[in-house]
Image 1 (cartoon, rainbow, N blue to C red):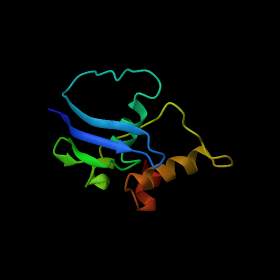
Image 2 (tube, rainbow, N blue to C red):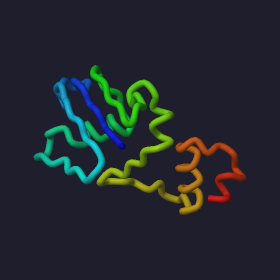
Image 3 (cartoon, rainbow, N blue to C red):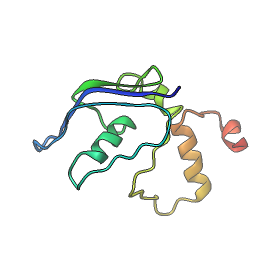
Image 4 (cartoon, rainbow, N blue to C red):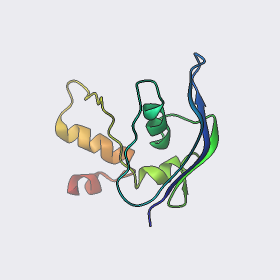
Length: 115
């Protein structure tokens, strides 16, 4: 069973904005919606869980993977596409996919070509 467990997760930005204030949440298999007004911390939570930014404190695990301390392990099993995704100008689709494969840990160029 896939389980996401979040305990007392906090994040305060350098400008003093407290985006996450002691988030506690357990999500098991199934569909889950994360809803809230602008500025509620939805994107901050998702960016933290996707290892794109660090939390100040707390814990988060996905199927036993310590998200905050094992980001490379999490990236092997988790994909994240934010609402706003900027594609790099001048890069081909093949180059972008190659770059994403490297980020996912597929270092060998032959393996990437097979994908």
